[in-house]
Amino acid sequence: MPDETAPGPQPVTPQPVTPQPVTPQPVAPLSITTLEGGELPEGLLDAVVAYEDALRRDDAAALADAFEPGPGSVRVDAQGVLVGHDAITAFRARRGGAPARRVEECHVRVLDPGSAVVVTVNAPAGGGRGVVTQLWRRGAGQPWRIATAHVQAPRPAVDTRVWRVVSGPLVPARASSGPLAGRTVAVKDLFAVAGHAVGAGVPAWLAEQPVETASAPAVELLLAAGASVAGLAQTDEFAYSVAGRNGSWGTPPNGAVPGALPGGSSSGPASAVALGQADVGLGTDTGGSVRVPASYQGLWGLRTSHGAVPREGLLPLAPSFDTVGWLTRDPATLRAAAEASLGAAPGGSAGRARSGPSGATGPSVVVDPRVLAAVEPDVAAAFTEVVDALVDDGRLPGLAAVAVGDLDALFELFRVVQAAEAWRSHGRWIEAHPGVLSADVAARFAVGAGVDAEQEQEARLGLAEARRALDAVLGDAVLLLPSASSSAPRLDASPEEVDRVRGATLRLTCLAGVTGRPAVSAPLLRVSGGPVGLCLVGPRGSDLALVDLAASLVG
Image (cartoon, rainbow, N blue to C red; front, side, top):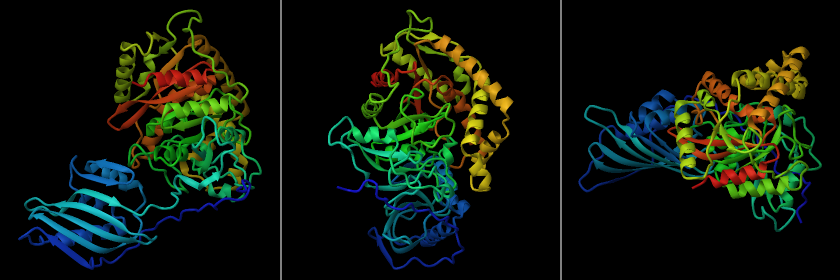
């Protein structure tokens, strides 16, 4: 039997890639295949060489110019399809350069004087072989440009943007049968896993942490249900973000929308599940850290009732709001993970939403139309269309309208208490390690450092009053709202834009945090930018029934 307490594979810290000026070199050896009677068009090989040189220099402007303008250009790789010049350019802007490679073969098939298929075989500096297939075209008097590109790169053994430690398995299942038998779990790097330290998305923190001697109960519950731990998956720094960026480990890929942010702070588990590298992502949700990545990547996600799953062995951020949750690709697996964990945990009630806000009879599902003012117009339209359709076909009962109150005021109270608790959790270490955190995360902790005892107490009193008011409004009903204010922002979105989206989304997600209620994100909405979750917020203790209700909405 494997020793489950033995140290696993050591973490690999990715080194930043600094592009160096490289003198363009001829592409050789050269193998050319042409159509019968065709000739190699003038300037084509020069364009191919210039493109490879631009890659080596990470010349974003030259790379953007190399693709045909407009909505018709296409780039394909293992992560998905990018359609249109804008999407391709946005992808390149934030990826930090392409891995160094040397072109060893170039095969050209001329289609006509203005178009040709070019296939290059390259040797990446990291080993292996890659193949790039491109359709190059030029109009009269125009330079050669790429219309379509298909990139096949050697797959790394471990994508350190997604995983800090991964094995097969890292921790085996405790049982050969159970609701999760044969399933694999990506554990957010906040939970204790025996034989490994907790990294929290911060390499400097990881370097100082002891190896854990026991796994967190939330991990053990999944192991007892037949699942195995595939590895420790990345998180935003100290889990204090909903974007999914990490300045040290890199941004995990969005498995549903290439070139977009993955959502966080359960970013690594979400990407691992969306990419098919794990069946279950074990995460945490303080202000939306399960629901937002679920929304951005088209996954099912559950934030549990506050305290329903034990939080021992979990590195805290803001204990008043921290909860355990899971991400999956389908509702059945989410139900199995929830049942395995809630059924054996105190407070894991499977109560059902039965009545409306009056507490007696009436609709059990409610909406607040004014909530839609906080979301993008396309999300509001998609939400309305889907909810109306669910009512029309009988999968939802008639809806009642409620007023949840001033979301701006609620978010401000939530923000103050969260920031104060976050600083209490990590402030001493952060003060001793200046400059370690990314600017946006450091700024949030700085807010917490500035919250005095009187401000915190005032905000706590305001939250308690808001919770009582929301409980009176919602009763045992299920509240419907979008899981996020928009689809996933692009990788090249400005810090200001990401912060704007973050604020708008947290105004939605803090409703569950303030009330301690469970919330399911179901991938039922779609806008032009990608998937968006339909969120169901239920009564405390109704976690399993809430998953069942969400699953029943799938046509």
